[in-house]
Structure formats: C-alpha cells, structure tokens
Image (cartoon, rainbow, N blue to C red):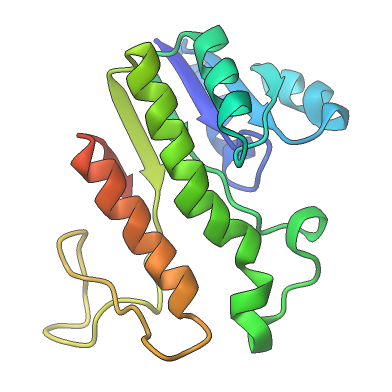
Length: 175
C-alpha cells in the first residue's frame, strides 16, 4: 500500500514511518524543511517538502505520491514552529497547530478528494479534554470538552474540526 504521512518527520510521524516501512508499505513522508529530507529517507520513506498551510503545496505533494491512504500527523508543536512551550498562553503557543488542524486538514482532504485517495486517517487528541459527564473512561464517541471561554478553546475547537471534517469525508480520527 502507498501511504502518505503528512507530518512524517514530527514526533509521532518519525515513529510511525519506520513501522509502516517494516510492514512493507511504500511511504511518502512530508517535512517542512529540505534539511530534514535526509532524516526522512533514513526512516525508509520517500521525503517531500510540503507546506501544510499552502493548498497548492499539499495538492502537488499528494498528487505526486499517488497514495492509497493519507495519514494526517501534522502539528506545529516543535521549537522550530511554535517556540518554547507556553502553557500559560496556550492559545498563542498552539496557533501553528490550530492552523494545521483546521486549514491543513481541509487542504489534505481536498487533495485526497481531487486525486481519489480512498482512505484518510488523522491524529486526534484526548487527554484532559474529555467532557466531564458520565464515567471517567472516554471513547471516540464521547464529545470533547471545548473549554469555552478559556485559552484552550481555539485548540479544542480545532480538534473538533479535525474530527468533524475527517469523519464527514469517510475517514477516521484516532484520539
């Protein structure tokens, strides 16, 4: 299977890519920097530089890879993209990830539709953001707490966008 890992050089992508390669999949993994192409290739993938916030960049990368599945692992949670973690100003610090989870998700879904990619899987998140109703164990069916009127709200709304957009397109989101 041809697998396109958007965010393949990130924290989760760099662990996922070698596992996919080990299982015999042909992997194209994206990075935002030409300096990381060698790293991506060391993981066993074909590397491609892609700007997840640029619809043309995303469309061209997906079209060239001709994948059977897109795996959305894009975040901006790195020193290079967001700087030092700042949980006191979470809304500002997480802005790169918020944009990738909204605009980037939409660009990947549009590229998947335009090129006929049949499968789409996205990274979600569930830790402290489960709704505070029912039991303490939550599943993908339980709603997220959007933390209205808090600095975390934009990030939680972005996660909701990923879940709604991807599942509406027939894909899956893994929390």
